[in-house]
Length: 424
Image (cartoon, rainbow, N blue to C red):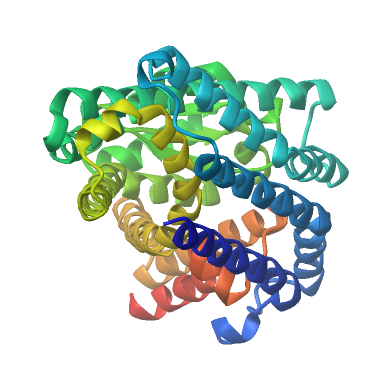
């Protein structure tokens, strides 16, 4: 077992290291996307590449730190004898062990977080606070993540202890409920801890967006805006929630650099996520994957002769070991998860184009071709401005795209928008 674990970690870290070098030397990878987009200027592409490559050596440093830390944790698991379960297997010890592990990992990647999260962002004019503000933000993120981790481990410990040899069935059933609960936690606890939310003040834009929502049978009364500018100059919008708790948020930075046509396009995109209930489907798909992982783990334990009594009696020790392996295992699951995410994003892009065109036809007597042309121009303008304002690579290298990209590339989205004009 020890050899298998070390081999698995070695494969994981080798793959991650290969992706680091692939991203540095192969980006931009225009050939993979059928050539560079004519809509992205050479200046914009050069600025994006400069931003992407800046501080790359610190990514490697933090990667090595994290690798050494996880290998040392694995070594400790195999070399330190199991302790008396009565003395060291309580919930308090579980929380303490999780805190030590997570703190160690956070310190290992701190150079990467600080240099790329603060120094680079400040250098390129994105971060709007000083080092103290960044430290407070990082600490809040750390504490929230640690609390969630402890809650998950405590729930898992209870399930294993209470449901005994049926723990994997119970865990599989609990994951969807946990996913829904965390979604609500994000909306009603995490977001308020970081941002202030206010209604959209621009009356004309508000009426336009509400009209678009109502035309798609979404009876909204307000448009929510968060104060992203208190932290950053990056522009974005996002959707979260499920069922009656679905919400769309616009960043205030978006309002200051995009015209009304482009804001309507991005709102329509998020409206697509809202109507298709993508977050709920994402939770359900993640639940299926988790259930498969639980049953696989139960099968492995059974083959190794590890009983549920042994797992319950040594849960704290096994939980840290599971955290080590999950860091590597999730890496190999990401391509599937992100492939589905890109599928959702394409569906939302298509919905946005269709809904903006339909709204234009309903509110104007202009010819259809002219309305379609305006909608395509708005979507292209949105993608170009998002790329320029955020210094995003239009054509990331194919391997990093396959593993890490949650959205289609800017080059692909521009081409799809152009093809929409021909299709309509």
